[in-house]
View 1 (cartoon, one colour):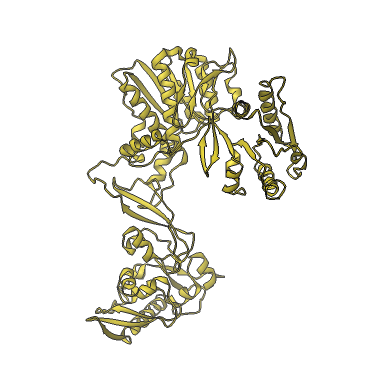
View 2 (tube, one colour):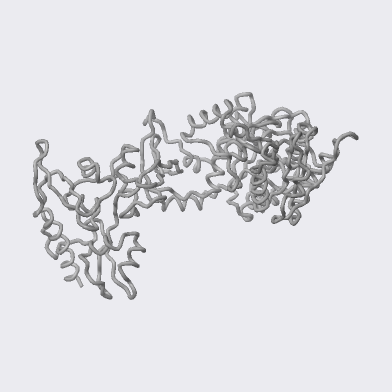
Length: 617
């Protein structure tokens, strides 16, 4: 078998050098070039290897090659002395030559099946192995780094989380589009083609539209002397957080599922310059933590002294139970977190038993609040969102034609529509119309609704459904209706829950046409000066952009800890005085009942105007 491999290798090498030896050498602009005629199945990468030049050199001297190669095409290759490999059979290393993989043919293997397995064309794989017939037990060579030219378009670029980058480095994930080539991509990011090949072992012989490749660039105007303060660096500082004040006047415990051990294991096996598979829990928790730190630093400047204890719950109840046993009950004034339901129950019961205030920064069922006056939830429930939406509709549109629609086969949809109806009708006077519910099935027509529309008034259609299929079908029928002559001039305003934003079947122009109103527990207005300032401050510290969880962490910490700062451990008694306007959420907590916990009653209502979502409440 070794003899066969050597014969195959020298057969390929002989063929390559025959092309050079038989090539025509011409002189252009005072320099010598090989005149190479492209053969069937040849790629730019293969030709560059024949002549021992880089792809950059090939494309710089043959710009048309960037758009793809065709049989018979003439290429001009800078003349160089090419030395043949004269390895003897005893010293030949087939593993390293041309960056190849040795593959032993198994039963059922064909050029086609292998081409699919290794993402290489049948013609290229066959020609690379001198078109030999595949025999059981025989070894063939498969090139690892393969490049061809086929696609071009505007790239999609994003900055992934990666611990191997320096303070001025960016790892860019580039989405290949139609007719884009390695040459054009390298030009976009001002890098060498080889640097892309070095960190993308899976690049196909032909770049596939929609595939992703990686490259490393330097951020402009960046000081290389800066220490690397990327998000990853906070991982190993979290468990040893220093006191943020002179001494512990208040002690705050932050509980988040960092999953440090598991994430460290993943990072340890992360190849250099690749998009590391960082755990979502880890990334979100770090961003939340960073938001908390920024909030506490602001309060520290205002005179607050505190001791922050950060605990990694690992999203594991066994771990949570162990952590709770080690909490100094007597000196703990506030717990922020955790964020998963199975851990929340343990923490809430512990806090109730030991009379410790808990602020939960994520969405949890309202039933957790009952009979626990030590718990505060900052993300408003769907029921609260519906109530506040009904209040807004009454205040803004009670003189208009208001219609309430729900999905009749969904118990939750019916429940939320009843909440909306009850809240709205509790405000009307004797001269105002009460709100009625139109219960429709997914497949039902909207004829009954059409008969209630009024041309001379604004028609406010409230959708309390969270069923995407129902919303999509209803909106499609509504769009068809307004495109008829009879209803084209009717003013229709659609109001709904956050789900309405995510219906892909509804074009943006119709969201704008219906002045779509949305109620959300929180929202980030990236056009506001406050948010822009926050982002810039975050970039200065962490050299990356904040995520949604960063804003939530800041709002959760600032609203709750400032309450502690202003009113002491009984700060809940002063919730009625506290109105916090945050980056993601506004906070005004209200007690569910005299024996239960508190829920944030504030929501954000947005509407489409000139194809932008703007806040209206």
